[in-house]
Image (cartoon, rainbow, N blue to C red; front, side, top):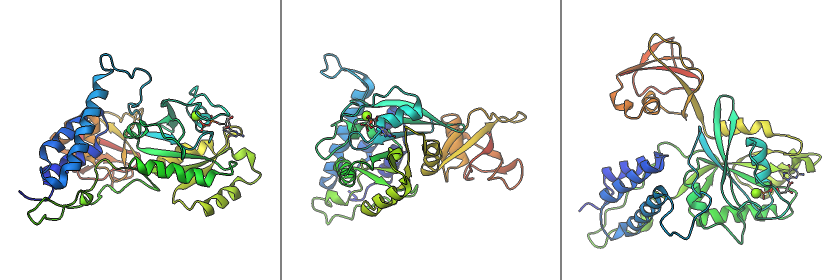
Length: 352
Ligand SMILES: Nc1nc2c(ncn2[C@@H]2O[C@H](COP(=O)(O)OP(=O)(O)O)[C@@H](O)[C@H]2O)c(=O)[nH]1
Ligand SMILES: [Mg+2]
């Protein structure tokens, strides 16, 4: 038996990472379990896959009969161009920000743990919608056991910190440590589309390679934006933010905002658009004007084939060619193949 992960397994794992809808994720997980080489070196991974299958099956099956847990939804179904989780220490201003950005009635309060469950809301930026999810705080002492599960659906994180809190540097560090413990890494930008999959080195015939050498498909790598809240409390928030960044040298793009004065609030949508490398594409039928009312959204580097898949599931495999107008077209109506990389505000006419 070859020790290396099979190409079948790798493509199932890639598909899992791309999958957004829970049923699709479940399908991919089953395929991963079916195709993973069964030897000692993959035992941990096999167990992890089985756990995820069990969790997702339960999530999709709805509340179990006689289950102890009934109550608010912990997994928020993604809507819009991306799902963004608000994360930070207690009283950082997450719920106030959520209410201000989405018009939600998120409860804010000068006491910790006012927020107990995930709360979704929509933030409009130009013609794109982002789903923001308010969450309970993360601190050195506590993280909700279900938090990592909820983050499975997130595409990015708004890391909210209150610079007026004297412990904010330590608190931010604690948040990141807590997330790391749950296999959630925060990055300054979205992970590359062509992340190399680590090969399992050939095992010498006995026992298989150590599990550490396997790339962990369940490690979440989420791009994050650092939001310094309560900017109204400072005469010079930029200087305050710069001083904070000296002490907490994270690589994240940062923004000082205030829900009291509205400072920086209008910049958040654009910052998320940049962070998530969103590309909007409008679809068009032959001999008809483009539908400019609703863009399809994908990530920078996305292709015409991916657009086809968004327009209609299964269309990608039947695509013959497309015509493009806009930033990626050399001339209006240029005929291109499925591999053509689209750009923001392209109009695409699919032929199949
Ligand atoms: N001065 C000021 N206070 C704020 C701001 N945003 C939130 N707060 C206050 O900070 C406290 C905690 O806010 P909350 O949104 O509940 O924080 P959360 O625990 O992170 O959700 C509340 O008393 C808010 O009124 C802000 O921009 N400026
Ligand atoms: Mg809150």
